[in-house]
Length: 429
Image 1 (cartoon, rainbow, N blue to C red):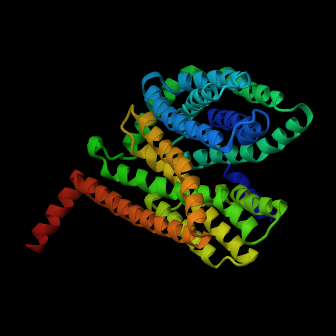
Image 2 (cartoon, rainbow, N blue to C red; image 1 turned 180 degrees about the vertical axis):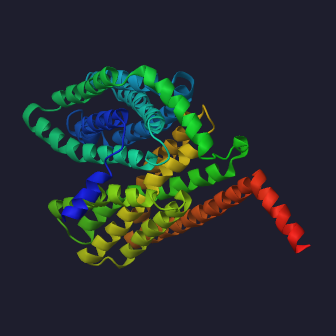
Image 3 (cartoon, rainbow, N blue to C red; image 1 turned 90 degrees about the vertical axis):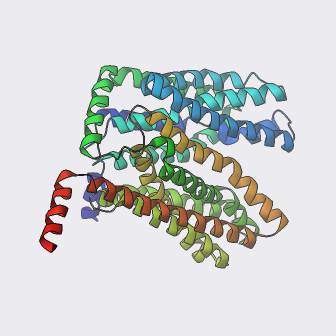
């Protein structure tokens, strides 16, 4: 046990102060994002909107997230991540507070679109920021660390929100949500030295040259397009974990809210205990990110095929374990791969497209899943998800082959290898 703990904490070493600050800011931001968690309940019970109207509000949130990711990536490349992160946190804080003063349906839809768009500008800027303060050896662990902060924030946020709602209704929820953004921006401005950004920018450019980043015609980067489609499909599967699967647990397995909560908590617990050690171990191996991502898609898809036989809780636990393992392998190394494909100076754009694939999946996944369940059955939905997973596996397999071909083509361009090849030909002759 002591050996495991030492190994576990070793994976949290070697990060710069800036990475830890970005992790703290992300945790505060996610833990404070309480309004969205109880938005449907607030709109239905306090403002008396119909479920159909609330559905349109959620559509506005999804479209706002897509637009915000795109705009955030574009502006990050032009203005830098520092400016975009500050602007996003500052405007989001006051935007969320202003939502409590909106009561008209159209006003709320427009307000939710604008606030969500501004809030999601943060994502591509944050990805680029973390990548700027890391190197090839610790970049995947650093991005995993930030994801861990997001998960911890998501876990603690509902608990805090529930206590606030019980004591002070919803008004305080808006204020806390907005003020946490202001707190995050204050820490960011006080601790991170803007001058270090330019030094980090120069360093990462040198590192990319040493790492031998393959510069190809990015206007026709087929590999990145394949990666985006595959990322969308696996994210589509992942969001079923928090939408249709809990409903299945209640309707078919007759589990109560506490038991359903424990099963969802299993996902977070497995990530907390094993993600960083596993990523730390894989970073030290020679395994290519595309190969790890491919195996991750296999595990996630297997989890949904196990749901076809989930007549009992133990089988369901195995399914959640496989989905979680796939999540760890997929999402940790996907961040790194997306950044590695970016053209110098266009990192924000590439990370924005990657974030947008998740936003699109978050919009469509619940709608498709619930529609299939309503018209057909849970079994049909699991079969559909398994089929989607198989398509994702085939795309990741194609991606891995493409990257291998690129590496071979790059190696053949090296003068030493060409010289060795010519010498071997002469010997054979």
